[in-house]
Length: 418
Image (cartoon, rainbow, N blue to C red; front, side):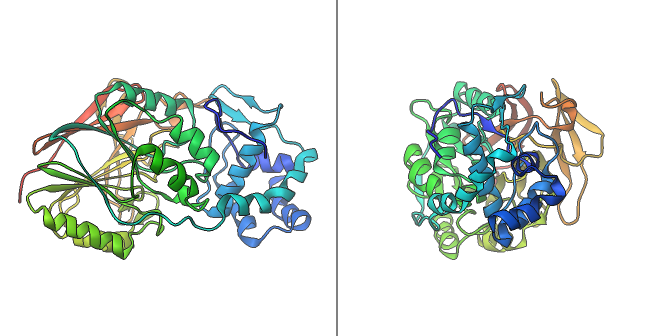
């Protein structure tokens, strides 16, 4: 498509309005028009329906959770970047201006799809194990690979922090293509000297076959495998690969990790992954829980940090295994507020915690609320940020960090032996 990776490549908004403009028809006629004029497959047509479902307006990024849908967004985003009529809106997002005269670009989608994905990339196996100090600060940030101004501020605040371990919990939008990985992850990563950098594999990285993750992310971060362990005297920080097998662990991965955990019986465990055990949108991921149960059954998993759901929730303490569960998918993708009972329980500066009610088999918790700086009604969207962990011997203190790097809502992760 003639596009080159550049730090100046902004976030690109692709929603159903842009597809409708491109075809010169209303939402109701998009599917039939695509089918009649471009002979696109059922999976792509279904993904357009999904894009219509998540589309709100033209202002904010939306994401489709399927390979053809995410790849269609990536394709149109690359087309938008090289168009002179595209413009940067007040939110710092590139807004395409498509008309029906441009519809012919869709004839190139099939060939582009095949070239960008080219089948699933064979990811490196094994476990990357690295020693870290007993006293260390860790930055966790999820769903950050967007190129939005908020994501850039998150990266700058992490870069300015004392965190010498920096872990992305996954997702480069829209489908983790090489151009998106270069522009939104590698070139915008919060680089500093003498820092350990790691990234969890995820579904959006794998929509394009994982090629950007394998060929760019892993080498750039000095990471040898999507599955990794950061080890000190008291803790094993374990990064799970839930991308290669979508929202699950492979049998081999689970076996290797259990061997490592069993070999260090005096050390407690913190899990990090893209996909969560519990989701306020999808409920409990029972299959992932079964995959991770051997680790949970050791009784030494103290906390599990994940992304995938856009927002921040600190869940109620999980009862069966005593795990502290946190969703930290608020690193840079604009998101509508998580469900709330509307009752602020804690406030810190402009941020507040409100109760997130129990939804199905997903436990209740505390959700992060506050001004997002987006849209005509900023309170309809949530604040972005990251999570800071301070490890000091057996003690871990968690803070919620806003996008400018200010700490809020401290929580002590229980590291005592049981």
